[in-house]
Length: 354
Image (tube, rainbow, N blue to C red; front, top):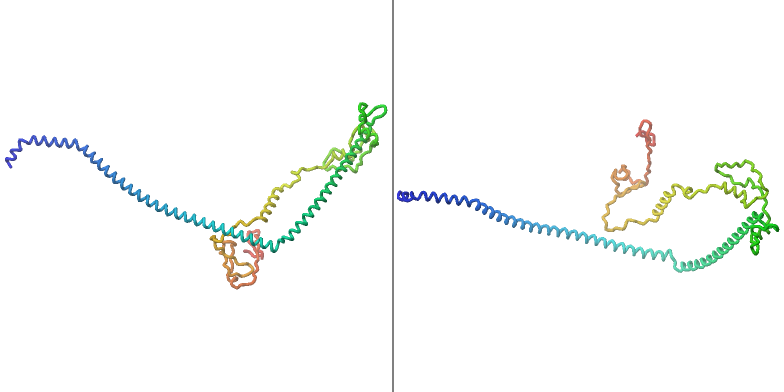
């Protein structure tokens, strides 16, 4: 061992130098080896995490697919059930309509409508209508002729009155009138009328025939009228009675004034009554619908085995069950009238305080 130590002693410097050289090289490469190791570890761990996430995703997809398929099949079954129920209801309604048609047709044909009697009635009605139409046409023609006759007489009367008023325009031998121009080959029709009629005589209008004016006016009825300036009217004047009637004619209210202020509400109420009388049943027949169990109410005038509704649900009253069990044939119901006095106490119709 001493010989070996003696042999190694000259190599101590070389060993130290090799040791420090290796340490320096190792220190220089330590950071790069550490980074390489960290990168390898991060890549391995990332691969493991990604593989685990892909596995979880595949399992979640399977779970979602199974659940969504279950819900879709359940929803489809509900849709099929609703469609089948609707189809059944339509079929039942159609069959009910057919049954009603057959029954109503049979009832009408057997008890209401007689075809041959109806045919005879329509033929007689047609003949009666034709006869009535002919009579109405004759009556209309007669009325039209009568109106024409009355119109011609009125027109003739108006022309006669006008000729009487214009009698002062009659031509004379010295002065031709307005309706007898020398430039015309023959006189006018009015000239011939003026020769046939007599002049109108001036007469004062009777006071009792004047209409009474309900409105205040400056016209005084009691005041005596002045005598006319001329004995005969100087021109085509209207009669005094007609002028007075035109001046003091009564009021003629418009449709808006004459109509009631509640006419619109009354019309709406009448329309509502008409709709209520002619309304149809809005509740269709549902044989398979789940209707709630409605409890029966016992009658007031007789006992009944049906169950009574709970207190406070509808009428807010209590019933004596012992009276219902006795099964009386009739039960009288009295209503009480409550009155409050000046002290605020409540009294019934019998006069006792409550």
